[in-house]
Amino acid sequence: MAKSQETYNKKEKEKQRLKKRQDKQAKKEERKANPKKSGSETMYSYVDADGNLTDTPPDPSKKIIFKAEDIEIGVPKREKEDEVDPIRQGKVEFFNTEKGFGFIKENDTNEKFFVHVSSLSEEVVENDKVAFEVEQGMKGLNAVRVKKI
Image 1 (tube, helix red, strand yellow):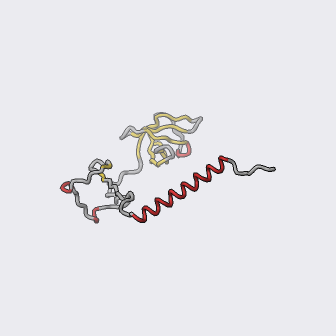
Image 2 (cartoon, one colour):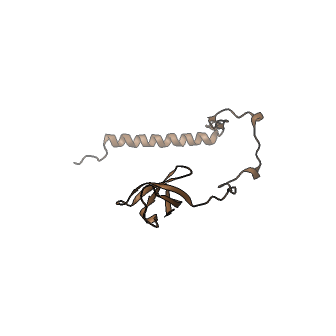
Image 3 (cartoon, one colour):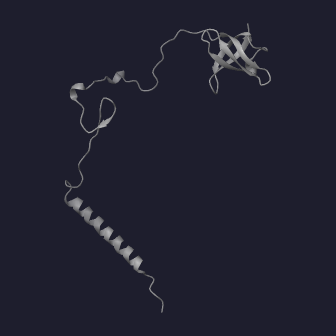
């Protein structure tokens, strides 16, 4: 004769499932019967002046009132700036003709800008005085449209 397919372990698991289902049903009925008792406590959290969360409400005397018109959503409008001459002047600090790149140091700010051979209108060597414009490159500002002075 063949043994029953139900093992002790299977029977125990089924008993546990039934017990859980009955407990859940009992809790559900209790919540329906006593709606005020069940965890209806509401927790509030407030933000203090430093931006930290706290459980105490803020002091009403320190309340600041804002006008809705004063709140700007998005990028604020730029104020008109003085137009700056896009052509800058500087000196070639370093230039590697084999690799085709170098650096130009601006006269006014002593800032260095990367320059590629493709941005040159004529050949340059170190210590040449040049005029150039600046554009944003992949790794920072690059000198473009470079001409000897």
